[in-house]
Length: 200
Image (cartoon, rainbow, N blue to C red; front, side, top):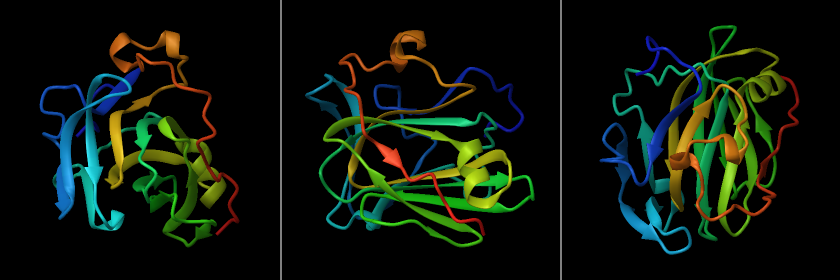
């Protein structure tokens, strides 16, 4: 998708208020994926809900034979915690040319690590959260290798998505374009993913 394109600054994968935001995404499962207006921030968002969170998700890219191909090292997801089990998963290519998967879930209490999958606990505050992932640090701490490229992303129920984007560095809120900001200020969040892994 982005492999042969110039990559700098900010690259957005999805924005709830955008035109046809799920056009490049594939929808899976028997739950509900819809666009609604969130009362708290008064803007359109994507909502994914299901009785069993692991049975409904969206994935990018739509074609599993292709990849996202982004080399920017910082991933930011602005998501709303619905007080229900939630999970997301992504895959990267590392400097050993190995595809490594990372899965974060608030239904997981500890970290587990295998040669191809790192499963991490995720803590979210009530309401809107900004989840930021340093792909260089995650790949290096989990596998002792370097991040090369981001391959795919899956977002499972239950959550609301405002925007998901990559950046070449961490940006302060005031540095972001208006359409990347949360119009209602985000509280200081305790959202976190465990970043200490045993080496494989």
